[in-house]
Image (cartoon, rainbow, N blue to C red; front, side, top):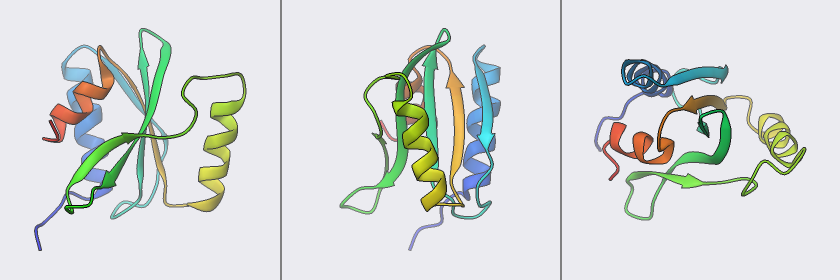
Length: 112
């Protein structure tokens, strides 16, 4: 079994690197430090782009995958996040505002 970063370490690294590269990242919801699921609310220049979640693939590797509504269609995103928070109190939610946020997250965590 290989070692993996805790959720808190992963989120902290994402936030620090986003700031170092001229972007912005903010923890909107603090989940379980050890193993909470991590959702990234990807924004580019203040415009919602996607919601992605770190998930295990069929080979046991972590990948970022889109989840939730395709676009911020009125209250659809808020409703989806409310349901996720209700089902998973350990959930992390991080807003990531940087150029090409999905690519940034994948490169940052070695998932390209």
